[in-house]
Image (tube, rainbow, N blue to C red; front, side, top):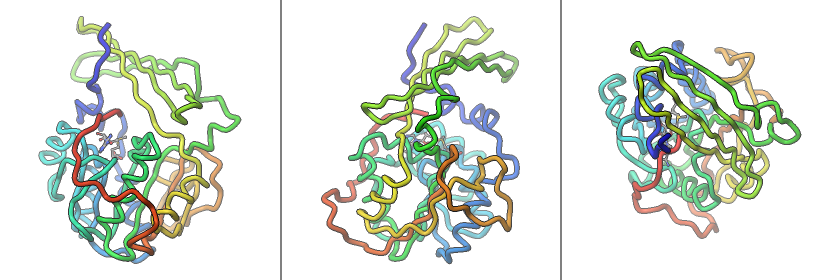
Length: 283
Ligand SMILES: C[S@@+](CC[C@H](N)C(=O)[O-])C[C@H]1O[C@@H](n2cnc3c(N)ncnc32)[C@H](O)[C@@H]1O
């Protein structure tokens, strides 16, 4: 067995889209609705844009969009398959695309949770503050750390999955565990394929971010929380659809936040980083 630094899904963006289909672009529509309801300006930065499908939909809706990701494979795929936005390589943990270059930063499908440490979260929020025009918005959608308080239904038991892609059957066995010391949800996934290739083990992790912790972090970085809720959203049950308004609880497994930058400089000690593009992609 090999232990891959690479990632089957982010190294194969077409496969990623096939595994996590969003044919109606619900994530992009939900984002657009949040931006519209809160009167955001036109310029959007999609951090952790992945295949670019949401960035391109927002571009098609008339917005000026920059899509940013750490994965070169994702960026190349986005440029070819979802053209329109400008695509750039940047690290969530600290990026500098220019001061006030956007009116909204969006961060979808738990991309924000690739900030594992407090320093990385501070780096992300400082960088957002630098990138946003005054009054700009942060819109994020992710797993909810609070869901795992007292619930074990998603944990510790291996889950098997299989799918066929380009004639090869790929099987995965996935186990999620809670790392209480680092406050991370860790995922171990073992891939096998019926094409004779060696099994590959991949490990990744998401920060277990709690709603009140997120409120505190946002306030410390000069953001006012406008919405913080567990649905409806683009990956909730039931799904969000046009016309539905945000709820008020933060109990279910997805967390949605909309926050406005109200103070462009704060007392926090972490400054926006100087465009670092190092780090590991860990989807
Ligand atoms: C779950 S995918 C979400 C993609 C896209 N936002 C969507 O909703 O389809 C997470 C993305 O974050 C990217 N990513 C992971 N760590 C990153 C980092 N440190 N900086 C920038 N992007 C990162 C991955 O390459 C991947 O494309």
